[in-house]
Length: 116
Length: 110
Image 1 (cartoon, chains in turn red, green):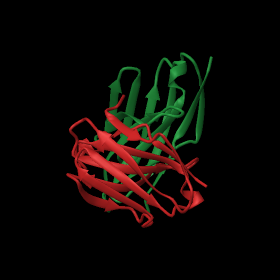
Image 2: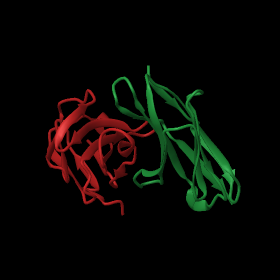
Image 3: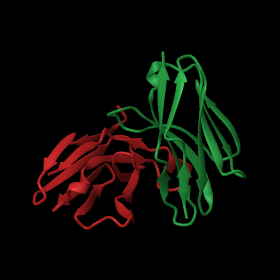
C-alpha cells in the first residue's frame, strides 16, 4: 500500500466509448503524474500537475484529457481511443515537481486498459 | 538527445550479489533514481543519488559517477522476492523532464 489508489484496476472499452480513470493520493503531496506503461517500453510520462496546475504535457494526443480538481485527486478522461492506447496507466505523486523530492515518487497500482 | 541505457535482463543466483548498470545521456543532470517493479505491481522507489559515491540502504546500494554518466544498483544476499524489473530514472536538465530507462528484468535462480 503506497498511499496512492487508482480505479478502476481493469478497463475494457471500445474506440467510441468515453471513460475516466481516477487517482487519489493520501500522502499530502503537491505533485501528481500520469504515466503510460506499454510492454517492452520505458515508462512514458504523460502529464504533471503541481498544486493542481498542469506543468507538463508531453505531446499527449487530445483523446487523453487530464483533470486535477485538487492536490489529492487526478483524473484521466478518455475518449475515442485507439487499440495502440492499450497499456497500463499509472498514477504517481511526489512532494514536489522539482529537486530531490521529485525523484521519490509513489505509484498507484495502475489501471490496465484494453481498447477493442 | 536524452537517453538511458540499462541491460534488458540479468540472471543471478539466490544469495549472490548482482549489479544492474545504467548509463545516461542528458543535457544537464540533477540526480539518478532507481525503482523496483514486481509483475503486476506498481513501481516502488528504491534510492536516489545526486552526488558521486555509494548510498547504502540495507541489502540494496546505489552508486553514481557523474563524470562517467553512469550509475548502478547493487543487490546483495539476493532473495527470490527480489525477482522484479528495476528502472533507473533521471531528470533532464534542459527540459526538466523525468525520463525512465526501459528496465532490467532480474531473474533469480534457486
